[in-house]
Image (cartoon, rainbow, N blue to C red; front, top):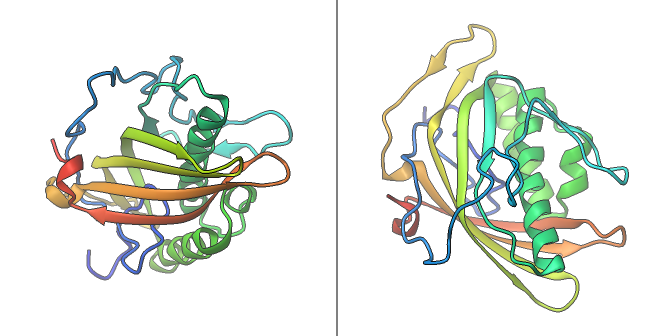
Length: 218
């Protein structure tokens, strides 16, 4: 696995932009008291994980996943329109990165729609690693313990955890799936910054990750 790209469920903008797509346990760690997680792949208040073909209105690009892979996002809406919009577009940024991996292309429409600046550059580099190694991934990646803060009218900071315990590297040619046992490194803490562009889209501009962070471990 050291030579292959590690599974990334969100763009990791630091030097170590890696998620060891081995297995990452489940559940979050310290959940907030009022954190009654909603919308985990359902039609609840939080956005459901992508169905095989998910699209948005207002000219937003459709994001398509294969039937053997999905993202699950668990969070409750805050009731603040700007915060909820930033949260929603943050999940679409993650989905766009994974779609690019599935498509085997760095030129997908959604990737450049929901990401900008360093985050876009990093995500393109990361997707290219999957392309070069002939890999993709299957299974499920869960995102949880979301927190969002606003800075002015066009800047937001979103932190969250991921659980990759049910996601695995898959070789495109052989269709072989590499299943590995979950470890502490299966859990990742993300700190992302988003900027709202002229079209009202909250684009992810920067992401820093901390693999194995205890805050995300069960």
